[in-house]
Amino acid sequence: MNRLEFLQTILGTSIIGANKISQYDGRDINSLLQAYQQPVTGQNIGLKTNPIPQLKIGIIGLGNRGKTLIQMLQYMIEQKMATVTALCDLTEVKTATASEMLGQWQIERPRCYFGGEDSWKKVAQQDDVDLLLITTPWRYHAPMCIYGMEQGKHVASEVPIAYSLSDCWNLIATAERTQKHCIMIENCCYNEEELFVLNMIQEGVFGDLTHAEGAYLHDLRAHLLSSDYYQRQWRLEHHRTRNGNFYTTHGLGPISMYLEIGRGDNYTHLTSMSSRELNLSSTAQENDMGKLTIACGDMNTTMIKTALGKTVMLQFDVHTGRPYSRINKVVGTQAVHDGYPSRLYVDKPELEFWGHRWLPQEEYDEYRSRFQHPMISKLKQISQEFKQGHGGMDFVMMYRLVKCLNLGLPLDINVYDGVLWSAITPLSELSVMNKSETVIIPDFTGGEWKTARKLEIMRGQLTN
Image (cartoon, rainbow, N blue to C red):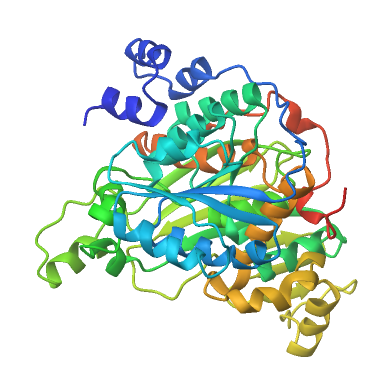
C-alpha cells in the first residue's frame, strides 16, 4: 500500500475526500486534516427524544458479543422495559439460537434475517424497531449506524463506532440531520472501579486533574490466530495491514469522563509510536500456522494533550503474553489512583521525604464504600446475576441505555463522544506513519465542547 492509498483508507472514500487526498503534496498532514474537516453544529449534545415505554430492539450480529448482549437484556425484557423484534446474522443457526434464547423471556419471537450480506438492512427497515443494536465486525459499524438513522432508528454500536475520519464526520452529520441518538456502547465506562474513581473526582477527592493513563493490554494471540473465534479471522486482518492503536475506547472512554472531555475541555493533538512486531508472528510460527506478516507493532503508545493542558497516555498491546490491564491511572493535585489492582493514594498537608504508600486496605475500603457511584448502588445486586457480561458492567450499560430511551432522556455517551474516542485510531496511524509527527485532533462538536456541562453518567436516579 503506497502513501496515498494509506491516506485514502484512513481518511475515507468520499468523492470530496478523494479529491483533497489527490492534491496532497506529502508535506504537512495537518493541513490535509484541516481541509478535510466538515461543518458540524454540536446540536445533538443533550439530545432528548420522545419517551419509548417499551423499547423495540433489532440486533445485527449474533457472534460472541451479540450473544452476550442478548443475555444482558433478559431483565429489561422481563420488566417490560424492552423487547427484541428482529435478529440478523450471516448464519441461520445463530439467529435460530438467539431466537430460542429470547423465547424464554418474551412471548413473541423476533423476525429473523440471515444469509445475505445486505440482510441486515431489513432490520433497519422494519417498522417495529426503535433501536438498532450493532455487534458486527468493525468496518460495518459506521455504515450500519448511518443507514439505521436514515431509516428513522436510534442506533447503538459496539466499539469502535468508526475507524476512518470520513466515517466520523458522516456519523455526526447524519445524527444531526435525523435528530436520532447514535451511541457507542463503551462498557468500561460502567465498570464499578471506573465509576468509583469518577465519583471521587466529581466529589473533589483528587483536586485538579493533570494526567491520566489508560490502555488495552490483553493477550489476544489465541483469539486472533483461531480459525473460527472471529468469523473469517476479520480481526487478524487489521493487524496484518495497519499500525497504530486499534482499540482506544476501553481506556479512553473512562478517562474522557474523568477529564470532562466535550464538557469544558477537549483533546487537541496527539503523537503516536509503535514498537517493532515480534510476538504475534513468532507465536503463529511456533504453533505451525505458517509465516505471518504483521504490520501492527506489539506495543503502541499514544500521547494526547487537552485544551486545558492535561495529558493522557494511551497504550495498546494484544500480541504479548501478560495479565489483562487497562491501567486506569489518574493523577490530581490531591490524589492518585492506579488500577490493576485498584490502589489509591491521598496526599497529606505535611511534606514527606520518604514513605509515600498506597492507602492500607481498610482505608481504601472506606473510600470505596463512601464513593460508590449511585448507579452501582442501585444496580449492583441485579448485575451480579449477569456476571457473564464482563463481571456485570455490560448489564449496567444496557440498563442505562434502555432506561434513558424509555424516559426520553439524553444518553450517557453522545455521538460526539463515540466519534472522538474512535477517531484516535486513524489519527494514531497517521502519526505512526509520519515518524510520530504531532497530529491535530479535529473538533467534532463545532466548538460546543467549550461550554462546561455536567456529565450525564453522574445522574444517579433517572427520572423525567
